[in-house]
Structures are given as C-alpha cells and as structure tokens.
Length: 247
Ligand code: GEK
Image (cartoon, rainbow, N blue to C red; front, side):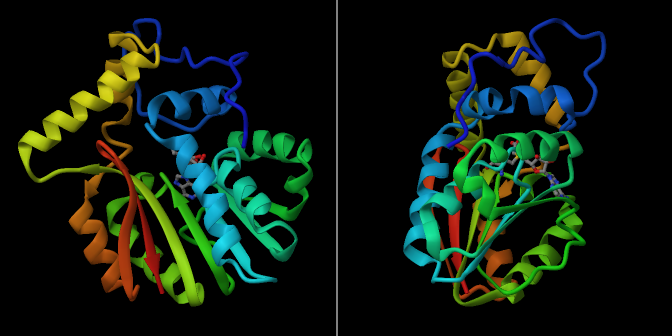
C-alpha cells in the first residue's frame, strides 16, 4: 500500500481563504494525497486492502484489471500484489497530470509497480479492453452526472463473464435524519483525524460543485440498468460505501 506519508501532511485548507475555489487535483493535492484521503475517507485503507484480496480471489491467470481514476495508484498496486504473477495487465488511468506524474514515481519505486501501465487520460473516452476486474474507487462521484450511466455501460460491456466492478462512493441519503447523522459523523471523523473546523468547512465548500454524491438506490438501479446481474454493498462506514457489481 502507498504509505500515508506524515512528511507530507495535508494543510491545504488550514489557513482562512478569501475565496474558496472549486477543488482540483493539482500538484498541491497530489503532494499530500495519501494523508488527505486517509484522513478524509473512513475505511479507505481497509478498502484498498480488500481490493487486493478480491483481485487474488477473482482475477484469473492472465486477467486484465483497470483502476479508473487511480490518483497515486493505491488500488492498482493492491491488485498487482493481490493478483501476483497471474495478473498480466493492470491499467491505471487518471486525468490529472500531477497525479500521474507522482504515481509514476511511486510505482517505479515498488517491485509490483512494474506490472502497472499508467495513462494520463479521461476515463470517459479511454477505450476499455476485455477485463476481469474494474475499480472505480471514489472516482465516479467526480464524473458529471450525465456521463455516469454511459461509463458504467461501457465498463459492463468490457467485463468478461464472471468479471466484477468495485465501486466505492460517498453517498447521499433520501432520509433527512440519516443525511444529517452520517454527515455529522463524517465531520466528527475528520476532527478526530486532526482537521480543524476551518479546514473541514473550507474543503466542504471546495467540493460542493465537484463531488456529487447520489443515493445507494440510484447507484444500484443504474448498475442494474447498465446490465450488471447482481449488486451488493460489501463495505459501509457512515456515508461511504463500496459495492461489488457482478456481470
Ligand atoms: C484511490 N482511486 O486512491 N478521468 C480520469 N480520472 C478522473 C476523472 C476522469 N474523468 N474524474 C476524476 N478523476 C483513488 C482515489 S480520487 C478520490 C480517487 C478522492 C480522478 C481525479 O483526478 C482523482 O485523482 C480521482 O479521480 C479521484 O483509490 O480524492 O476523493
């Protein structure tokens, strides 16, 4: 797993900003990303570890895996290690040049990294080859709403029989009480991770128009409409969920 480097702590929203602009995956974010995602997404490390176990269990010899919206390549590395020698091809994509540049450096320093092909590309127009496993680990939430169904359809079509999509997302709730409770618990989690009230609220403003969560029901229905045979959540912590969709 890519280590949470305390040498690069996330302090991006620590000082008051005159104006909080929309969140972008630039050099500053890439530099602190392991710390940022570990302290912001409850269960992130567990999900990455389980992606490795899933690859070990489900990816047949010679299978191809995709990590779509790979950031620094943590899920790709977990699949490379989990699939070990039997996985011939792991393709990891991100459309942030800063992420891909840093991911390249990290993967070059890791033995398993040599089995990963990195591409700086938009997942919306990158052609997908037949695959055994596709990971969208907290990526779909950044894809414009109108493009999500088509992307899932293309993934379903690329998957071979028995293939799986692992989809992790921040989700929204139709019931106002749960929306409030889980959102409060997420902020509590972030405070517990050392983020200040100011950091939490400035980051929330930056993400408001960029990270668009949907309900579990919306995700499930869209996956079924995309042609997946079965969909089950396998992990949830408050408003963060990870689903497995089987072809
Ligand atoms: C992990 N999966 O560590 N095409 C390619 N990349 C995209 C697109 C797109 N259209 N839209 C967003 N991204 C990673 C974590 S982070 C989640 C994923 C987070 C990329 C974006 O550049 C960023 O690197 C990533 O999706 C989302 O397991 O920061 O909450």
